[in-house]
Length: 66
Image 1 (tube, rainbow, N blue to C red):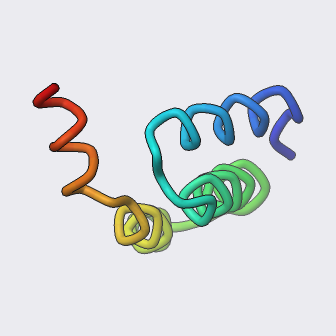
Image 2 (cartoon, one colour):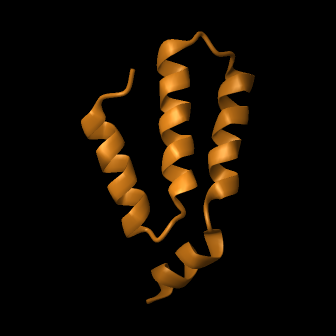
């Protein structure tokens, strides 16, 4: 189980980065899965790929240019 303070920090960080809430949800689910299950490296990568897919890369790049 992922500590509630970690979940809160993830949600706050995602919000500050102007990312959709789905990024926080997927990160939390990914952390819970790898902490509670014996996932193969392939499974871990696939789950993390779902997180990457939710991240708005263009928005991050624009923010970094400011």
